[in-house]
Amino acid sequence: MDLRLLFWTVVLGVTWSAEAGMMGDQCDWTGSGLTATAERGVTPVYLRCREGTISWVYPRGALRLLFRPPLPADERDFKVCVRVMRRPDPPDLFHELRLNDTEVAERFPARIFVEGAHKLLPLYAPNDGDPRELRCFRSRKGRAALYVEAEPEEGTKRKMATFRYEARPLVRRHYDPTTADCRPCTESELELAFCTSDLVSRGVIVGSEIREDLDTTQLTLRLTKLIRATAGEDQRDKQDLDDQDDYYRYEVDNTIERTTHRNHRRRKARSLHAHVHVSSVCGAAAGAGEFLVMARRRLGRYSLVCAPRIHDWSELVKRRNAEGTAHCLLQH
Picture 1 (cartoon, rainbow, N blue to C red):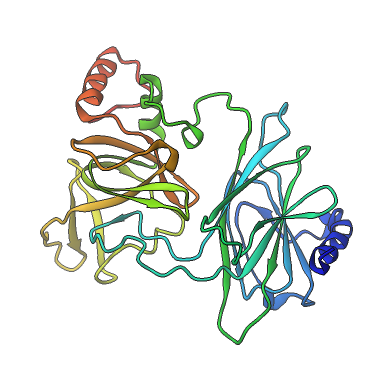
Picture 2: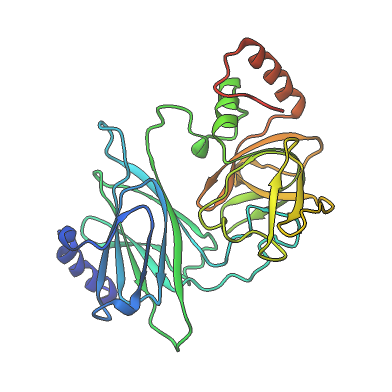
């Protein structure tokens, strides 16, 4: 038996009941390996949300992550997906097409194991030959835990092991855009998606790219009318601005323009773009025409929910608004 796995198998019995010494009980966790008391120390972290981010600076020893997402009372098991971050994500919205994940991926400085009944099962390793950043597993008897083991230290370079996670029920009681298949959305699903999505915009697909690391097709959209865009937690302070006094403002007609706090003079508007991801099995590609794109943020990236053609969406909006039965004020 591999000595590494033997060591962690022993650790399972030691830390299974370590709830009294837990170091986190939240959605996100940030910590430093420099505070570890021993090279082989295990830091327990309890995560009680459906999604969040783990950031481990100067990783040393290991983390034990125990997932306890909020679930209906009659459900026990769930699915967890983890996306290791090997390069920064581009901004949600951007003007320059060069912002297309051009940074070289760095080595993720840790190995990830799923806690099994009597042993640890490998989920991710920097040298496992699998290009995917996204890995998923299921809970076992209502329990799900990961061990994140830091790689041996090499030199004094600052390292950070950052990854995002999401936990979802196995049973779909209602329409869930983040796990929906490739079929077109029904009218009721279109309404729900419009009212609840993080990104709602008219747009034209100007490019597509297969992303093996995310197991998705990345669509590049040129937005023609932005209706709604909610910023992610890590995007709010990283806008693509020329200086600290600039800001973006969305007008009533949803075109974007630049102003300054000093003189409030308007500058020429530039085309706004966004990346939206679709499951690779859907076979999505760039196509002609304008769409109403609705997407939700999933594991840090916009994931497509629905994308009807503008003509079809406009007809639905007129009918629903006239009936007064829509969940929110629909627009086109």
